Length: 430
Image (cartoon, rainbow, N blue to C red; front, side):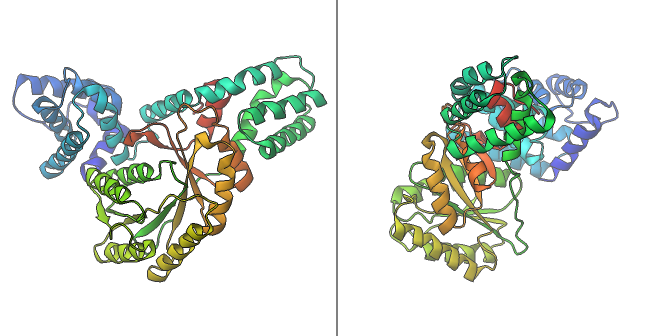
């Protein structure tokens, strides 16, 4: 949307405070008062929404007029203003939300994505809080052991390093990763002359952060970018695709979803519903169709109709089923034949609650489907959040997103410092 550039100006320059801003909606006293309140407010997304949503309890004319006024205040052309409000109205109707508390967060999320403001202070604060809450059970599992270990005065002897490994293993960091981390920390302590356990906590934090490599972003030089989604049954792959699609659409991309899970008619129907809600295109051949044929024809459609991004869903499959894993090889081959370089990304969706079983999944999907990126779902409420460390340490693959709940907005970019801070002491660091 074109109005987002003008909104960005206000965030960077504080234009909302100036009295020289152009007139907004000339009309009621209520509109004038709201306009003055917006101009006087601190130029932050959450603050503006507080002003706009004051007195709003349910969707209706008051909400739509307030949103329109906010967009008009940012010199948004009428058509773009109407498109944003209309899209949000449609989403609310589809989700059947009737209370402000149910949709306020989504509204802020939509604006933040469209404005490319996920690094804006409000959005980072929300993300850090969500990660901290999500890792509460994992932290409970690790906190007592670490607190005892890092109490000042403890000598860094063989017993200390053995206990550290045990604490990490207990948090599902895994034997291999625990030994690696303990070894690196021990070498660092010797190198830096650290003899007291109290000085070691910050070093552990830094070593844990170093485990996670930044997520790679492979830009397709020949659009559309083709993203192949893989994973075992029950990890939340279809809803994850929906959330990724939602993000991409809000960022202004033209997105197509391809229903490559042809084993279950319900999977096709579910994906079609999500595509409609997100405002994305959809392609399917129905239950029982050849998944590779679906992928091939979806690329045809994406190329012909100028799509920016194509997500190809695949059937959830046990990593132990050789024939189904070979099918992924075929899909990859077909995609590359129709569109050079495709798939540009292969995302493996993992369930954080699966613990150490996730390691076997990564190994097989990396070997067969060439998975090069991981999304970790169901991180909220699990006591096995340490699996993120195990996966990143053993396979050197980036974790690009984490799932922190059921809503579309609950898929968030993975932040290693926030994750480690929440894991160790419940205080995510920026």
